[in-house]
Image (tube, rainbow, N blue to C red):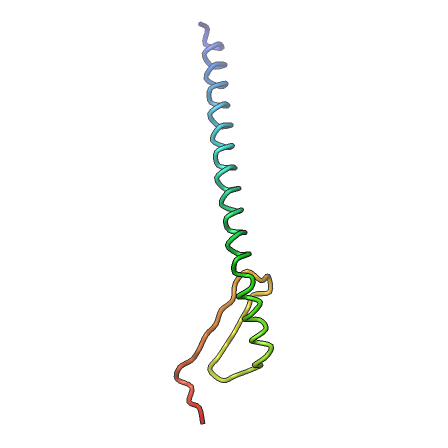
Length: 85
């Protein structure tokens, strides 16, 4: 087999390997994205409840409720050092 023939076979093998790995990674990340979307959807009622609670209670010393604008997470911080009169 000529040098060009060997190069051609190596190139074909390399292209097939790269194509297979790309497909594998795309499948892996597509599943990962789908799983993340499912987890976000499961949290949506809780985040909506936190948003409603924030609107209901307004500003309260020692409590900070911060739902994100995009609706995929929320932070609740309670400062236990605040004294109540």
